[in-house]
Image (cartoon, rainbow, N blue to C red; front, side, top):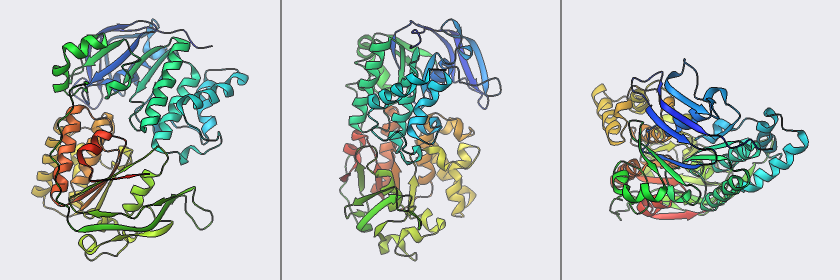
Length: 483
């Protein structure tokens, strides 16, 4: 049986991460009644994810930070109420535990002591609810980022928690997946009456399910709290100016430029896949239409989760070998390097093709944001003045200056994404391969990131972007390849 819906109460509550001088959240006062459905909004870095983790009782002990005030879940301190709440983290990779899909979904139920005869019906029901239609013995390592997000949500739904806490659950999903997940959550809420708190930048997705909106300021305090219509209508312009995505207040987009130049990269009868080795065939294979990547243009790769967007992007970037066909670098790109990017050394890739992975953490190497941004320029043996100039410009443009001395792994999801893009831009490659470049951005940082990428192409560079963000496609894409 599902747990009873739980209430959540914050009284002058706050949290400061151990590595920071500024409090991430402070002075929070609110009561969420059992069964209430709340949309938690705020600019990137306002502490939304931190608050969700605190509600779930997993924020950490004194070695990870300092708490103030009181945060109660079901009448107990949040750290003593674990198991009452199900938390979907911003990074689904961090929640994949076991090697097979069915076992991973069952893991939470097993830890809660759910009778065995109830576990597997719950597992199948949860997978059906989120639209993850793969065999139960499918390897979790073979799933795409969006599929892993569905998997993590299925594991939470199977536990039937008293509070459902979701951190951007649809950020990396295709449009069909967004609808399926929202409907799945709606069915769970109707069936269980669970308390619901969701963080999402695109508010239209969840407005049909919520009855309350709480907005956090950039300083980590509550600046608006009430019924969705009241908050978004009466304070829409103010909230949009602070970076909150508000319906009817779209971000500005740069003017389009049609200054396509020379062809930098071409494909010929290309087939891509994963798991390629001499001993076994690839785990999947995808044919890719012949394309030419030209100076001054953006090519968007779109399609459903699992359609191979990331695999194709990594192949075009020279990081995965093709199964068949070839990726050819033209003279304008390769210079003295070989024709095939897969054969290039890392230094040859550095100024030619830069890649931003779907998971930002996979490319962080240093202990501070400033040092992370300097990795590429230093590898190019630029002078200290040149390195500092590039780093300072990117810190300012992407609103990371206040975090220059922070550890990259302690940033919010949106801040990590901006940093991962900036680390590659710091080396100024001719082609930039981006996997979900706008994930986790508020409307203001989205606008600034898109403007920066538009300037990048106007300098006769090229972008290849794997994305579900239709606003991004509309703003920048010169060619769209749907898989």
